[in-house]
Image (cartoon, rainbow, N blue to C red; front, side, top):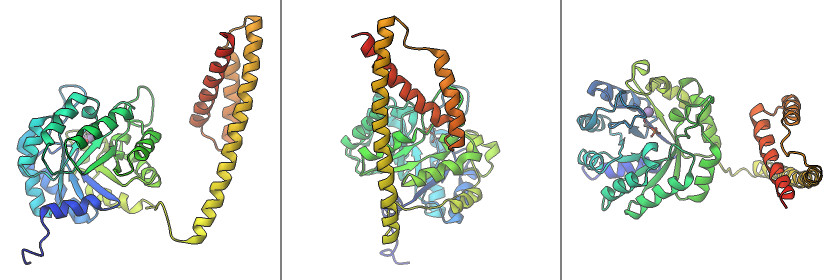
Length: 363
Ligand code: PEP
Ligand code: MN
């Protein structure tokens, strides 16, 4: 091929960055040269991956687990790119890591969830990026605070980085949940609304923490119009040095991507749009009614508050509340409403009701 026909590394990264849906995959961690080369070669063979990810420095919640192979793994990624032409992405958390990654021509950098929480670290990374032309992905912070996420975007943007993308990897939560990191989809949606110019990639691996629900999470993300997916893959997932439970083989990744229904936000078919508009109209109507009813309900709560005040009765009456919830669960089941939704809905209504009564009783 003539030199002029050969795409430069920058052009390849550019094309990958702009592709929708953007698919990023690779091991949680680079472990050995063989593992990196074999994973990337098999990923390339699927023809479905746009950018490779590999952790070189691993921020672990507790010490003692594998903390990353370090700088010595960077030439392996360079080699993998040479063999496959795929752009490479690594996580950076310090100025030194930025410097090392760029020294080995890493194409895309990402800021991890444990870094986004800390403005000092984000600023250090941002300062190291000043004057550099490299795309940067920013994961949500581990806690559900989109101001921190927004702040990280602002710091990186102020350093002059033009290509910034977001990764939704879910949020730490304490207690029983089926996820490793609760997705809290509404936060990703709100962040997308706030930053319409930035792509939002979903990370089903770190949300799920396990293989069996990866596809469900990925499908949900696509249904919510996310711009792409970042999914961890490994040649021998069960023996991965980090995040073994959530990784899948490159071939399994290809199957999974094939079974996703790739929905589009808009379509040109007029009939479809009309039908959708009608259904949306119905939903608006019902939502309107729900708000009206909630308003009425709270007016009654006010009256109860007045009554309780006059008769010196406490606001919260636990027995009554449990009885209401049990009834609602039973009813919800018949109407195909999940227990989780009923709980959230009743909690929200109950809290609002208590606030109303509180106001009355303390007035
Ligand atoms: C990772 O991508 O392997 C990682 C450490 O993710 P997070 O920052 O989302 O925990
Ligand atoms: Mn991981």
